[in-house]
Image (cartoon, rainbow, N blue to C red):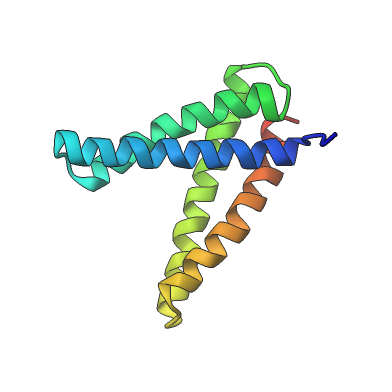
Length: 122
């Protein structure tokens, strides 16, 4: 029998949240014809709410609270900032955007998990 740890569950929630984000963003752009930046902003909020709800109960077996919600948003915004920073540094250094993406998808989820484990749901 395979036992899912909080890290495994966090990864699955992240995959589901990413799928939700893409689905919402594409739907808004294609069906409502809003600008992609607006669509992605809305999709980010929806995916973040889903991620908080699923990670709170399923990944970390915690209770919903205003405090954990605020900490979750803080970690999410820090991850967003790091995503932009890593992408920018790679671009300024002359690296391929694919290197930036590779670094983002390997580093940011790990740092996000640690942040949520050690700060959000402590």
